Amino acid sequence: MSLKICLLGATGWVGKELALAIHAEADLSLVSAYSRSHGGENLGKVLGVADMATPVFVTIEEALAVDADVVVEYTAPAVAKTNVLAAIAAGRHVVIGTSGLTEADFTEIAAAAEKQRVGVLAAGNFAITAVLLQRFAEIAAKYVPQWEVIDYAGAGKKDAPSGTARELAYRLSQQGDSLKEVPIDQTVGPKESRGADINGTQVHSLRLPGFILSAEAIFGLPDERLTIRHDAGSSARPYVAGTLLAIRKVGGLKGLTRGLDQVMTF
Image (cartoon, rainbow, N blue to C red; front, side, top):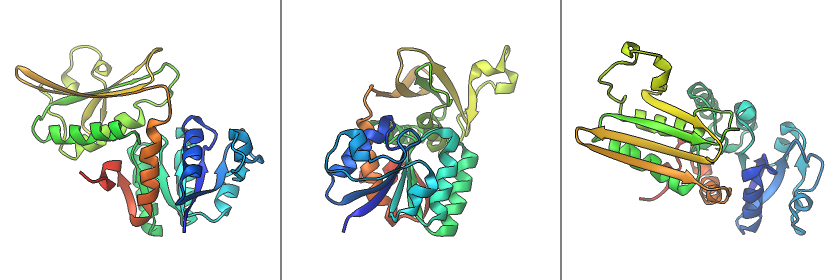
């Protein structure tokens, strides 16, 4: 029996690639989709796939009314939390691919998932190399107590830090706060120049033309330095394999799980 999937943001940058990938998998069935720009249409017609008969709805409520096992959220930061909470309230497992959610958002989502006894899997970035960045950085933080993060993205990206950088900072926080020889409040000059404190990690967000999405964790010890960096290209394809893995694994979880590596084998 195939897993029934509801995809929110089905005609977006990642959503298009993911919809095609789900349709091609024998054990997955894309039963409903949400898109503000294509509500009321057939997703197969929108994507140019003749044998795809997935209905596209103009509201989240309509999309969730179709019976599904897993809801995949790939819309926008401003509405992602609301969509996820609606899916949880409907008793659905959820995979969160949208970036920009805050720690307060995740706290609320975790409580709702526990109450409804459903699984929610969030990674901030489902590209396998980004997941490895988070995993390797967390290992490095066990041995190197001082680090900072640089978050790179194009000039038009509104959320800062990116979901990738937020999740990286969260994972580093599991090892503690980065040590600071000079406390931020003792900085001589504008304190903002030292970046934002995200879960005990100073994060610096660059938003410039020429970048797509990169995250860099820099660790320092006297006379030595370690840099771990992930760079994304212009295609959404890197996010597909990780999201498919999350879709298949989330049904076995209860509550909120952060990090795709939590369901990967190492």
